[in-house]
Length: 128
Image (cartoon, rainbow, N blue to C red; front, side, top):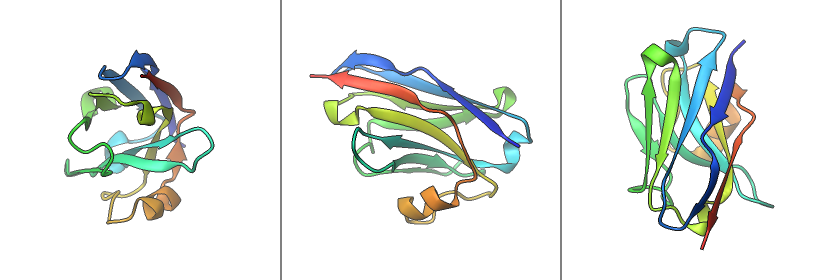
């Protein structure tokens, strides 16, 4: 069993930055690829970013160039650096893991179905 615990959410004005963290425990961290998803109010959960075990990163179009996903294996921690935040980035952000070397293969909806473990989420609110 794998446990994922997110932190770092909060309220920020448009143009600001936040860094989300996700600590992974309960199993061998390195055998999972990782991803961040978000769920805006009243909408479906959508992919934000993913990182494969070889370090390859993938970003959804709305966040490309503004968000950066990274991981620190020694601390079993996944990060999401979010810059130039916009009101439309307001959502609950979730960390997730998949028992695979590769997370993203071209479809965020497929990845959402393939993920094996989810955290409880951390709220990000961006005001204009």
